[in-house]
Length: 307
Image 1 (cartoon, rainbow, N blue to C red):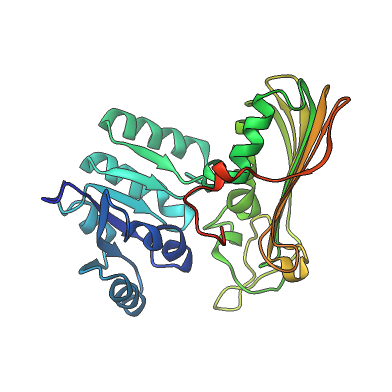
Image 2 (image 1 turned 180 degrees about the vertical axis):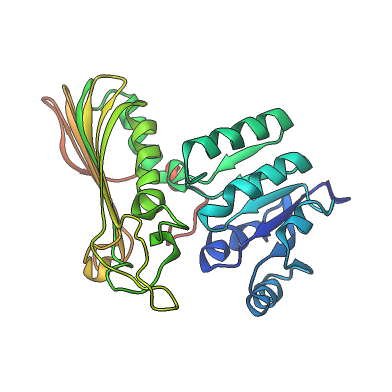
């Protein structure tokens, strides 16, 4: 811990997402301070460090983790290196936030869980939507009995950034886990948070677009869309769908959730850009109200007006 009693944070990764999700927030966080940054590209590393006033930079992330100068680390790197980074953090006694998906396979994830548990460090996987006002309000409505016993549900996460043949590491089977690991895991987390743990699953993974690497070789593809048919521990069933190749026009990104039960239903859509930007929640209660409802101001308290 630093002399100011703030948590000293090191960040691995210099992507735009790292800036948006972590650096834009942590640099003004009263309980912590970003004191170190690690990245592979020297020019980009220097650029991001200067932008956020981070004085210490590392080309080698291991050197940063073992430096003794950080209390916690943010792992915002490609999927295939999460395991090695988290295992090092655990051995160094450094608390860790790891980007989703946690690992590229279940065995690695189990090893990571055991390592951080044995080390006694604080950990988190950044499932951002579990903290978002609209989803918290939907969860409270469900917990208050809006639909009663759940019969079936649908969870969809749609994006279109991979509609062209451009190389994306997430869609390279040697490095990433595709639409399922990028978007699908968010919906799995939300589904289990809103409904119940998944008991059984049948999955269909598909790739629509061929991609080449920098040397012009055809990349072994990860999935650019994924469809899961699931049964939950409460006996209800449903689908979870994610795609990176949807043509959304000006909407950029969209999430859709439909939950139907014995007493009513909830249908939720959030659009992230364009004319219909924003969350929209429709509810129907047996013998009661039906229509769109607004998110109460209490759920939005403290957030910027554009969130």
